[in-house]
Length: 298
Image: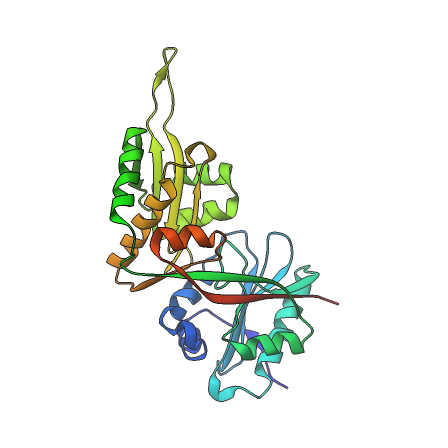
């Protein structure tokens, strides 16, 4: 019987992730560090074999469901039942924390992937052999960097924003409370956490004006972030009042330019909804596909 014990998210785990997760090897260490620094209220743990040839991150979502956030088995140790043992140990931990359902699905705002990348076929086979049901499909888009786009359209967007009195700016780490509040009010707490914890955060605003002798506060109209999930772009949102001004395109391109300056040659746009927007704005293409799985815990 394979022994599974609580473990630390240390360099040994980072090396295991880089070895096992061949499609994500370059950023595996960053993903491990991200998962090990989730929102303070999250219940989570790492479980591993004594010699670290297999490990799993597991957590409880805001809705009470259990999540397998990352599972990695050293290729030389595969076929020995380690993956099954890790999932079984993770499920026991979930039950102990009140979960009635287990998922191979991203647990935002702090997650590794939306689900199982279809290229990790053994992981999908493991989930299905253990009775997990595939219930949803998600996908990412890839944008080559530096991003390709119509310069004339971009200049027209900037001119339109200027004419509307809209300014775009970066929100430095440590000075993001106002933007995070806007994101929380317009969307949700998860996106607000991602905005605050992103590597880069950009936003659009309109300065306050005097009306009836009273000053109005600065009006934030949209935001875009990258690096909340290491090296990926997102989330991004534009307030209803600013739709049609080109705010989203400008903020997207600012983030991707920053990612290119940081040395990235491509960017993953995570958990994409509007394919056409990203395709037209920066020539992004749909590429990574994820299957989301779940099963009831007895």
